[in-house]
Length: 83
Image 1: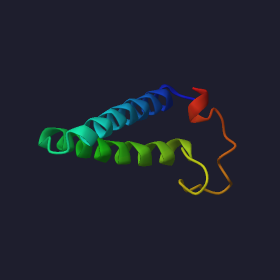
Image 2: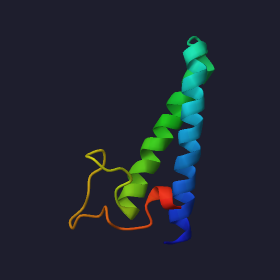
Image 3: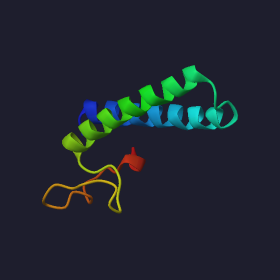
Image 4: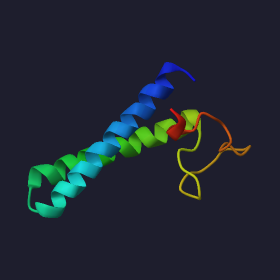
């Protein structure tokens, strides 16, 4: 895989961490407008990056949560959790 693959996957992992952290924070601070704005900003960035990743490297998730080109792409490695 090329360097962009690893950079893209790393950024997705970073964004997922931030989204999880913000979600937990918002459970106890639901009226923090700045945190809600940050959550929405990172969610949008993640959607864009997720689509870019799948376009270039194939499905990120299994079980119907990602589309696949033909032929079936899921067996391609390395899988995201193997990096």
